[in-house]
Length: 221
Length: 245
Image (tube, rainbow over all chains, first blue to last red; front, side):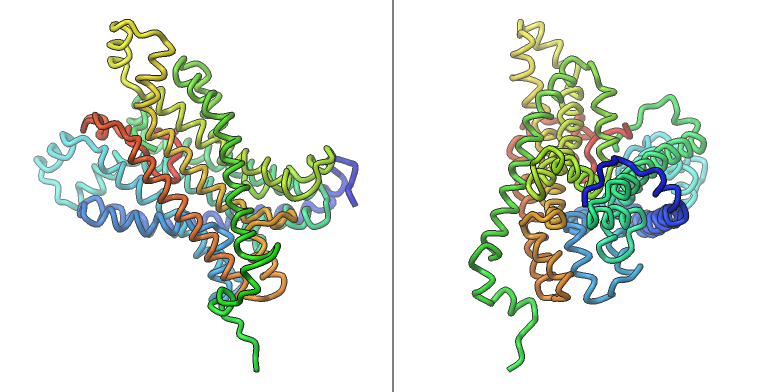
């Protein structure tokens, strides 16, 4: 049956509980994936920055992971890890790596040599240099990557509906199955809104944390 | 004798290589759908990107479309296109998929074309104008060649995403390689799911490699270290637009 009504507000209000728990699941799946992705990408990116020879193979592997279609990747994983959060997270994390690693390296590349030399001259150790000079100066570019990774992940979470998770993707999938526009619209509009809010929040956070970068133009995305 | 249900047997079974649900047919459907969608998207986004990049007018529009395009999940666009095409009498399957894939492909092509043309050095343009080039010549002989790697990078991102996403077409009753994955899930046949997944993954990687070669071929030979230092080299998949927008 094709409902004639474009959006059934009554249905939406009756199902607010479900909508809310889908939003929470969506945010949780995304936050966990981006968090783990960052925890992997930061050390790998720093390593690839210091050992240039490692950069090509690292981005090559991350690039292949990034290229594998999400539905195909979940299909590979389901026989191994089942219809589980683990399956979803392995897939979601793999898609964040290329973007994050590349931006960590690009960010560190963009740190002015003068700043490094000044810090070294002041007696900073390598570790202090990294945490107090290089990473803060690279932050705008790293956050730019974080934004792309987050927005991409929010979109990909909808696909995990096919393996029984999906957050708001569940609404899209069920809506498709029943030709029920209200469910499709709810899932689509809310996930897009979530992506825009996340993008905006990360930008705002970055501006607060790196006040010196406000006047500067961002280098590479 | 028990039926063999590993993915190797699935590939070896001659029945899977012929007919409407055979691998060659599904493969061609997938390639045709992807090519058509990227073609339509390029026909729409390239001229607009060139115009915005050349005149530097409407950059905000390009960036907004890029951001919005990333924010709306393609699965959602596919699902939203379905009721529209049904109402317009275009039916299931083909058209909703084309609409979703074109919408997916436009942002990377548009933002990269814009960024590539807008990123051409002002001094270079000034020199070309000084040599008496008209605006049309400027676009064709200076801006387009210099922007080419970024433009191709945009096409590459778009094409790889489209090949990957065309898999979802099976959810709205169209063909392509996604059929094996979606049907395999429904029938609990892991051999089919895996077979389909391998085929799509290979197609996506081949697409990436082919566009990578094109990107290398169109890279201007004069590219200086300065250009690379400024980050004007072509970004690979995923980084549609330089700058945090």
